[in-house]
Every structure is written in structure tokens, then in C-alpha cells.
Length: 363
Image (cartoon, rainbow, N blue to C red):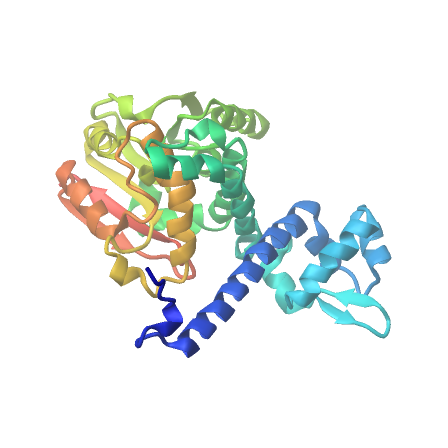
């Protein structure tokens, strides 16, 4: 039987094919450039270059305390990737200040280089994910030893900048109640930085953090000791087993519900754990539950990819629901309603393209 090539079909658009091939080449370049951005962040090269005038690879390596040969090859990627400027006459390199504003530690929450690290994190489990495509199941949390640290690095900067002064005031009257003194629980607290920030800002309130990861809880307890806090405590706990009826005035969950193996059970436990006038502050990925409504999402490919490579598969590894990162506002509101929340208000924080902020109450 004769094989018909795509070019021989009457509806084959050659220009479209060539355009897509060029687009794909660009994707390959961008993917590897992202990996090199991660390297630049981890080695401190961007931070070092931001303080230098146009410099040679030797000068840059000396400033960053790194090996010149590696720095020179990395700079080749940065120059061809249009991240670093190169003066061929003098053999010098310069990180423009406009670029440094997006990829250095001095940029704070605007530092996009921290996100680049997720590419290599996901790459570490690629073969395991491919096997799940064939056999089902999932990849367990233990396969991601760097995940807790990466999450902490990114979320800590956001919470430092926004939690007390911007995020908590989204809930009317909450700051006043925290100052007077209430009981607070954080679900999936990770390394506990959010709890510790609130505990320090509101010494009259009492704070508890639960997380599945013993490593994260150890980091949280270490920070409590370092900050000399007396109103914050942490415990390693599967929050699906939470059974503390009417104990808390405020329960928070910062980008942790979509990772749960049993999110429906967790949300119902949260509802039961709140006092009648309590509030649940849920921070989670701001997107639609419908794919067609996410076509213009600025982080669409990133979110669905991270979901495939981490959030969804970790949940499935524990025979969970596998909500995925992009479970979306429609499904979130439905699950909150089914869990006993009669009032759900969704708010946004200016400049935050990642999250939606749900304020849920039972009355």
C-alpha cells in the first residue's frame, strides 16, 4: 500500500507547516534558555552581573566566585538568548538593568528566575511521568526532594511583601480581629513562613500549621525558634484526617488545596473546623475550569505542564482526585458550596497574575 505523505494531501498548508516548525525551534531554544536562567539564579551570576560594569568572563567569574570556563559557556547562552549584551570588540558582557529587574534577587517578588527552577525539577521525574501515561497511577511527593525548598523560596517573598498589608485586609475586619486575638489554622503550611509572619504581626492571636511533609515542618519549627515566637506551633499531619470541630476563627490555605489527594474531604473538614462566624481564606491558582477560557492565560502552558508533572500526579499517586493545578474558579466555588460555605467572594490582588483569593463563610 502506498503511503501518502502530508505534503500530498490537498488541504496541507505548507506555509503553516513551516511556520510551526520555526515556532517549535523557538520553543526548544526557550526551554534550554529557561534551564540556563535557573543556573544563573542558583549560581548567583545574575546578582553578580547586576553590580558590574561591562566585564569579561574572567571578571564575572571572579566576582561570582565561579569557574571561568563554565561562566563563559553560560554567557554564550545568555547572549544568543538576548538576555545579556555582548561587546565583541572588547569581549565584555553586560546585564542590562531592565533585565536585572526581572531575574535578580534584588527584584524581590518580581524575580522570575525563581520560577525557572521548576523546569529542572519536573525534568527529574520525566521518565516516571511517562510511565504513568502508560500504566496510570502517579509519582509520589517523595520523588520531588527539592519541591519544598522551591515553594518556600517563591512564596516567602510574596508573603513578606503582601501577606500582612495586602492579602489579609482583603477580608473585611480580619486585621482588627487578629489584633484582638483569634485562633488560626493554615492547611498545607509548607515551611510555615506565612504562619510565622502572622504570629509575629499579631501576638495576641494563636496560630497552627499542618503539612504532610516532615521536612517542611522541621523548617517551620526552626523558624519559630529563630524568631522566638510563642504563639505559633506546627505538626506533620495529613490534613485529610483533620477533625477539630468549631475550633478556629480563621483557616487559610495558600496554593495547597489543589495538591491534596482528597480535596473534597479536606474542604469539608475545614468547614467543620470553623466557628459559626469564622472565615476560610483560600488562595489558589486563578484560572477557569474550562480550557477554552484559559487560552489567553499568561501562564497557561506553565500551569498545565506543572500540573501534569507534579500537582495532578502527586494526588493520583495517593489514589486521590487528581484535581490538577488548573481546577479553576468554577469547580472551586462548587466544591466550597458543597462543603457548607454559603458565601464565597473571589478577589484579586493587583500585580498577581497567578492567584485568586477566595473568602468563604458558612453564613
